[in-house]
Image 1 (tube, rainbow, N blue to C red):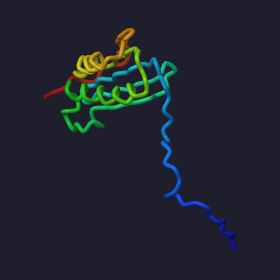
Image 2 (cartoon, rainbow, N blue to C red):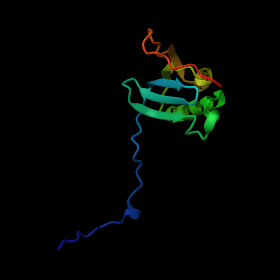
Image 3 (cartoon, helix red, strand yellow):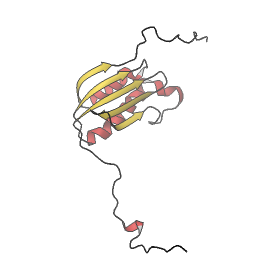
Image 4 (cartoon, rainbow, N blue to C red):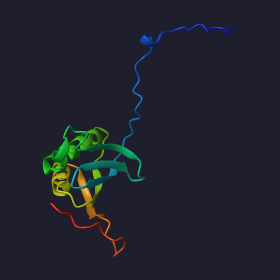
Length: 138
């Protein structure tokens, strides 16, 4: 027979404490991955730990509208809003992919007021590696 342990307080009376650990971050890296179907904006600290992220899909865009420049702009704005509250002033931008949201996301980052130390294109380029898929027939 198991003994019941008496509880002194209820969960309702416990003080509400935020579970998310809010760190003060002054410098970070903004990664923009722009594919033809979606745009993902990830913000990390300089060590690479993710602080905030957003994508066109999480901003409420569905289907082909996720690949649009406006969806990328909205995703970048949503991701940046959370890190400005944490005190980030400077950032580096890494842009990857061939999508339409590249320029729109960069424009939204520039408008946010964060000082950009550099913008780098990190799109992987094959040195004639894999055989490409067969041509698309429409």
